[in-house]
Length: 265
Image (cartoon, rainbow, N blue to C red; front, side, top):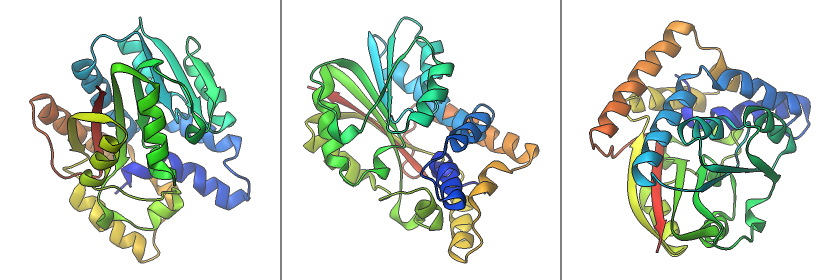
C-alpha cells in the first residue's frame, strides 16, 4: 500500500541516499514522470482545485511555495486561467520542470523561512511542504504576512503521529501533524480557519498495515512508483469516492492527509 503523503519527497530522498548527492536533478525528472497518472497526485489535485473554487472563487493571483515540478500549479492554471501564477521552490532542479509545465507562471528559488513579502497575494498554497521545515511557525507567519486582507491560505500536511514510520524518515519529514497542532499554529500566525478536512481516509487501515511493514525493515521507497496498473486504478476509484463525500459536505475526521483553509482577517 503506497505511503501517499511521502511520495514526492520519498522519491527524491531515495535517490539522495543512493547517490550521496542532495536532491539530484534526475530525482525531479522521475517525479515529473509519475505524477500525471499516479492515484495520489491526481486525487489530491482534484480535492485541492475543488476546495479552492469553493473557498476562494475570485482571486487575481496565487503563489505556491514548495511547488516542486509544478504539478499543482499546472492544475491551477487550467482551472483558473485568468489568475496570475507564482511558484517558489528551494531546489532549482524542481523549478526547471515547473517552468516547462507552466510557462505562464513566474518562478523564484526561495527559502520560505526568509520570505518577506507583505500583502502581495490573494491566495497561497503550501501542499505537503511545511512538515519538512523545522521552523514551520516562522513560515506560517511569513505566509500570513504575504496575504492581502481576506486572502486565503490553502495547506496540506501528513496527519496522525501514530502513522510515523521509516517512510517519514526517508521523506525528510520533521513531523506529522495533529489537526489541533496545525490549527493552533495557523491561528498564532494571525489567520482564521475557515475549512478543514482529512483525506486519504478510506485507506487508513491499509496505510497502518503498510507502516507496520515499514517498521519491520521491509520499506522500499521506490515501491511507491512500482504499483501495478490495476492497483493504481483501484486506488483512484477509492479517492473518487472520498472526493464525492467531500463534495457532499462531509468533513472527514481521520485520514493520512489534512487539508486546512485559513483566511486573513
